[in-house]
Amino acid sequence: MILDEALPLPPAKPKEKSTILVVDDQFMARWLVSEFLREHGYKVVEAVDATEAMGLAGSGMSIDAVFTDVQLGSGPNGHEVARWFAKHRPTIPVLLTSGADDGKTTPRGKLRQFVPKPYDLAQVEQLLRAMLEPE
Image (tube, rainbow, N blue to C red; front, side):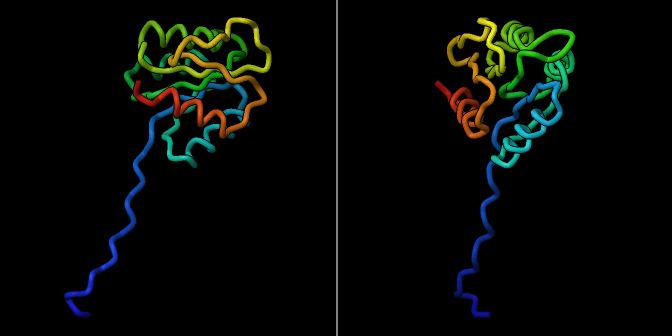
């Protein structure tokens, strides 16, 4: 090998994107969106209900945005998740989704948005990305 020849540089390691907390009591819905976001470079933390989501967030876990279904079975719902984040971690945006819009899902600026079901996974990623962009 001739020392003057340039060696190819290894490909740059992709910069890891933000951490998204995905909250849904339906396994397949949670799994599909989580895998899609992982494929797009996001770190994903999953929670099966509001109590688990608020527990993870309350533990100080690094979370950059939340994607939650409104209807989470018994117990607190997605609106309560959004209210918890607004009170305890107010800079973290929350994207809500539901197949049954109950009128409480109106967007509230950049920190709270809504996407109706059935949603397009690319649309979810695009909304999360927009919510995470600095002002």
